Image (cartoon, rainbow, N blue to C red):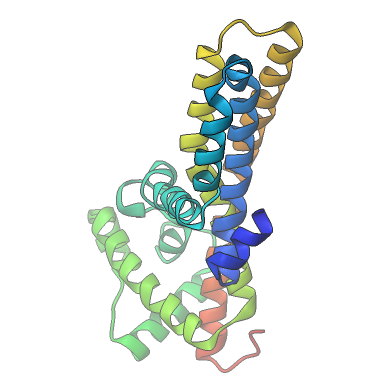
Length: 246
Protein backbone atom coordinates (compact mmCIF):
# COMPACT_ATOMS: atom_id res chain seq x y z
CA UNK A 1 0.00 0.00 0.00
CA UNK A 2 2.84 2.40 0.84
CA UNK A 3 4.36 1.72 -2.56
CA UNK A 4 1.08 2.57 -4.27
CA UNK A 5 0.75 5.82 -2.32
CA UNK A 6 4.33 6.67 -3.30
CA UNK A 7 3.46 6.20 -7.00
CA UNK A 8 0.29 8.26 -6.80
CA UNK A 9 1.98 11.18 -5.07
CA UNK A 10 4.35 11.65 -8.04
CA UNK A 11 7.17 13.00 -5.88
CA UNK A 12 10.62 14.22 -6.86
CA UNK A 13 13.74 12.98 -5.06
CA UNK A 14 13.50 15.59 -2.31
CA UNK A 15 9.84 14.88 -1.55
CA UNK A 16 10.42 11.12 -1.61
CA UNK A 17 13.42 11.04 0.71
CA UNK A 18 13.03 14.17 2.82
CA UNK A 19 9.23 14.43 3.19
CA UNK A 20 7.59 11.08 2.41
CA UNK A 21 10.04 8.80 4.25
CA UNK A 22 9.99 10.56 7.66
CA UNK A 23 6.20 10.90 7.41
CA UNK A 24 5.86 7.14 6.89
CA UNK A 25 8.07 6.35 9.88
CA UNK A 26 6.10 8.65 12.19
CA UNK A 27 2.72 7.41 11.02
CA UNK A 28 3.70 3.75 11.24
CA UNK A 29 4.81 4.13 14.87
CA UNK A 30 1.63 6.05 15.72
CA UNK A 31 -0.46 3.39 13.98
CA UNK A 32 1.30 0.61 15.90
CA UNK A 33 0.66 2.24 19.28
CA UNK A 34 -2.94 3.08 18.34
CA UNK A 35 -3.61 -0.50 17.25
CA UNK A 36 -2.11 -2.00 20.40
CA UNK A 37 -3.75 0.47 22.80
CA UNK A 38 -7.22 1.18 21.44
CA UNK A 39 -8.29 -1.43 18.91
CA UNK A 40 -8.80 -4.19 21.53
CA UNK A 41 -11.82 -2.34 22.97
CA UNK A 42 -13.66 -2.75 19.68
CA UNK A 43 -12.93 -6.38 18.95
CA UNK A 44 -16.32 -7.56 20.20
CA UNK A 45 -18.48 -4.78 18.78
CA UNK A 46 -20.54 -5.35 15.66
CA UNK A 47 -20.12 -1.86 14.22
CA UNK A 48 -16.32 -2.07 14.04
CA UNK A 49 -16.16 -4.05 10.80
CA UNK A 50 -18.44 -1.56 9.09
CA UNK A 51 -16.37 1.35 10.40
CA UNK A 52 -13.16 -0.25 9.19
CA UNK A 53 -14.65 -0.74 5.72
CA UNK A 54 -15.48 2.97 5.54
CA UNK A 55 -12.52 4.57 7.32
CA UNK A 56 -9.60 2.41 6.16
CA UNK A 57 -9.72 3.52 2.50
CA UNK A 58 -9.92 7.14 3.62
CA UNK A 59 -7.00 6.75 6.00
CA UNK A 60 -4.88 5.31 3.19
CA UNK A 61 -5.93 7.88 0.63
CA UNK A 62 -3.37 9.89 -1.29
CA UNK A 63 -5.00 13.18 -0.31
CA UNK A 64 -4.78 12.57 3.43
CA UNK A 65 -1.24 11.26 3.24
CA UNK A 66 -0.14 14.25 1.20
CA UNK A 67 -1.73 16.50 3.82
CA UNK A 68 0.19 14.71 6.59
CA UNK A 69 3.46 14.97 4.68
CA UNK A 70 3.26 18.70 4.18
CA UNK A 71 1.80 19.33 7.61
CA UNK A 72 4.87 17.65 9.10
CA UNK A 73 7.20 19.61 6.83
CA UNK A 74 5.61 22.96 7.70
CA UNK A 75 5.76 22.08 11.40
CA UNK A 76 9.44 21.32 10.94
CA UNK A 77 10.09 24.61 9.12
CA UNK A 78 8.11 26.86 11.43
CA UNK A 79 8.52 25.18 14.81
CA UNK A 80 11.56 22.89 14.79
CA UNK A 81 13.81 25.36 13.00
CA UNK A 82 12.65 28.18 15.29
CA UNK A 83 13.55 26.03 18.30
CA UNK A 84 16.94 25.09 16.85
CA UNK A 85 17.92 28.37 15.19
CA UNK A 86 15.89 31.14 16.80
CA UNK A 87 13.19 33.45 15.51
CA UNK A 88 13.14 33.65 11.70
CA UNK A 89 15.93 31.02 11.72
CA UNK A 90 18.54 33.77 11.96
CA UNK A 91 21.01 31.41 13.63
CA UNK A 92 20.93 28.78 10.91
CA UNK A 93 24.50 27.61 10.14
CA UNK A 94 24.53 29.10 6.63
CA UNK A 95 23.76 32.52 8.10
CA UNK A 96 26.19 32.21 10.99
CA UNK A 97 29.06 31.11 8.76
CA UNK A 98 29.04 34.41 6.89
CA UNK A 99 29.58 36.43 10.07
CA UNK A 100 33.03 37.48 11.27
CA UNK A 101 32.27 36.26 14.80
CA UNK A 102 31.72 32.69 13.58
CA UNK A 103 34.78 30.46 13.20
CA UNK A 104 33.26 27.60 11.22
CA UNK A 105 35.01 28.64 8.02
CA UNK A 106 38.26 30.52 7.47
CA UNK A 107 38.63 34.29 7.20
CA UNK A 108 39.99 33.78 3.70
CA UNK A 109 36.82 31.97 2.66
CA UNK A 110 34.62 34.64 4.26
CA UNK A 111 36.50 37.33 2.35
CA UNK A 112 36.12 35.48 -0.97
CA UNK A 113 32.41 34.90 -0.40
CA UNK A 114 31.84 38.57 0.45
CA UNK A 115 33.70 39.66 -2.66
CA UNK A 116 31.71 37.24 -4.81
CA UNK A 117 28.40 38.43 -3.36
CA UNK A 118 29.36 42.02 -4.08
CA UNK A 119 30.48 41.21 -7.62
CA UNK A 120 27.46 39.10 -8.56
CA UNK A 121 24.59 40.57 -6.55
CA UNK A 122 25.84 43.96 -5.34
CA UNK A 123 25.10 42.99 -1.74
CA UNK A 124 27.42 44.07 1.08
CA UNK A 125 27.50 42.18 4.35
CA UNK A 126 28.03 43.99 7.64
CA UNK A 127 31.52 44.85 8.79
CA UNK A 128 32.96 43.49 12.05
CA UNK A 129 32.12 46.76 13.81
CA UNK A 130 28.55 46.69 12.50
CA UNK A 131 28.18 43.07 13.63
CA UNK A 132 29.34 43.98 17.13
CA UNK A 133 26.94 46.92 17.24
CA UNK A 134 23.87 45.05 15.93
CA UNK A 135 24.30 41.33 15.54
CA UNK A 136 20.66 40.66 14.58
CA UNK A 137 20.78 43.14 11.70
CA UNK A 138 24.04 41.52 10.55
CA UNK A 139 22.29 38.15 10.63
CA UNK A 140 19.31 39.45 8.65
CA UNK A 141 21.67 40.78 5.99
CA UNK A 142 23.57 37.49 5.90
CA UNK A 143 20.28 35.57 5.63
CA UNK A 144 19.37 37.62 2.54
CA UNK A 145 22.77 36.80 1.08
CA UNK A 146 22.30 33.07 1.75
CA UNK A 147 19.12 33.11 -0.35
CA UNK A 148 21.19 34.40 -3.28
CA UNK A 149 23.88 31.79 -2.66
CA UNK A 150 21.23 29.05 -2.74
CA UNK A 151 19.91 30.48 -6.01
CA UNK A 152 23.34 30.32 -7.64
CA UNK A 153 24.00 26.76 -6.49
CA UNK A 154 20.50 25.59 -7.44
CA UNK A 155 20.92 26.98 -10.95
CA UNK A 156 24.03 24.83 -11.35
CA UNK A 157 22.12 21.76 -10.11
CA UNK A 158 25.02 20.68 -7.93
CA UNK A 159 24.37 17.05 -6.96
CA UNK A 160 26.40 17.05 -3.73
CA UNK A 161 24.64 20.09 -2.27
CA UNK A 162 21.27 18.64 -3.24
CA UNK A 163 22.08 15.37 -1.47
CA UNK A 164 23.09 17.26 1.67
CA UNK A 165 19.86 19.27 1.50
CA UNK A 166 17.80 16.08 1.23
CA UNK A 167 19.66 14.56 4.19
CA UNK A 168 19.00 17.63 6.34
CA UNK A 169 15.36 17.78 5.21
CA UNK A 170 14.76 14.14 6.09
CA UNK A 171 16.06 14.49 9.65
CA UNK A 172 14.31 17.83 10.21
CA UNK A 173 10.97 16.64 8.84
CA UNK A 174 11.05 13.56 11.05
CA UNK A 175 11.09 15.91 14.04
CA UNK A 176 8.17 17.81 12.51
CA UNK A 177 6.14 14.60 12.26
CA UNK A 178 7.12 13.59 15.79
CA UNK A 179 5.62 16.83 17.10
CA UNK A 180 2.22 15.36 16.24
CA UNK A 181 2.68 11.60 16.31
CA UNK A 182 4.58 11.16 19.57
CA UNK A 183 2.09 13.05 21.78
CA UNK A 184 -0.86 11.33 20.08
CA UNK A 185 0.83 7.96 20.63
CA UNK A 186 1.25 8.74 24.33
CA UNK A 187 -2.38 9.86 24.58
CA UNK A 188 -3.57 6.63 22.93
CA UNK A 189 -1.63 4.64 25.51
CA UNK A 190 -2.79 6.83 28.42
CA UNK A 191 -6.50 6.61 27.62
CA UNK A 192 -6.45 2.93 26.71
CA UNK A 193 -8.60 0.68 28.89
CA UNK A 194 -7.09 -2.04 31.04
CA UNK A 195 -4.20 -3.48 29.06
CA UNK A 196 -2.61 -6.86 29.55
CA UNK A 197 0.91 -6.90 30.95
CA UNK A 198 2.30 -8.01 27.58
CA UNK A 199 0.44 -5.29 25.66
CA UNK A 200 1.56 -2.64 28.11
CA UNK A 201 5.18 -3.76 27.82
CA UNK A 202 5.04 -3.71 24.02
CA UNK A 203 3.58 -0.20 23.92
CA UNK A 204 6.03 1.21 26.47
CA UNK A 205 8.93 -0.36 24.57
CA UNK A 206 7.68 1.14 21.30
CA UNK A 207 7.33 4.60 22.89
CA UNK A 208 10.81 4.37 24.41
CA UNK A 209 12.30 3.41 21.05
CA UNK A 210 10.36 6.26 19.43
CA UNK A 211 11.69 8.74 22.01
CA UNK A 212 15.25 7.52 21.46
CA UNK A 213 14.80 7.94 17.70
CA UNK A 214 13.58 11.50 18.23
CA UNK A 215 16.52 12.32 20.51
CA UNK A 216 19.08 10.88 18.11
CA UNK A 217 17.38 12.59 15.18
CA UNK A 218 17.61 15.95 16.98
CA UNK A 219 21.40 15.74 17.04
CA UNK A 220 21.53 14.36 13.49
CA UNK A 221 19.46 17.34 12.32
CA UNK A 222 21.91 19.80 13.82
CA UNK A 223 24.87 17.93 12.31
CA UNK A 224 23.21 17.67 8.89
CA UNK A 225 22.45 21.41 8.93
CA UNK A 226 26.12 22.24 9.46
CA UNK A 227 27.16 19.77 6.77
CA UNK A 228 24.69 21.27 4.30
CA UNK A 229 25.75 24.82 5.14
CA UNK A 230 29.46 24.10 4.62
CA UNK A 231 28.75 22.36 1.32
CA UNK A 232 26.50 25.18 0.10
CA UNK A 233 29.05 27.89 0.83
CA UNK A 234 32.08 26.06 -0.54
CA UNK A 235 30.15 25.05 -3.66
CA UNK A 236 29.16 28.68 -4.26
CA UNK A 237 32.83 29.66 -3.97
CA UNK A 238 33.90 26.95 -6.44
CA UNK A 239 31.21 27.95 -8.93
CA UNK A 240 32.22 31.59 -8.77
CA UNK A 241 35.88 30.70 -9.38
CA UNK A 242 35.15 28.14 -12.09
CA UNK A 243 36.47 25.22 -10.09
CA UNK A 244 35.17 21.63 -10.23
CA UNK A 245 32.19 21.33 -7.90
CA UNK A 246 30.57 17.93 -8.65
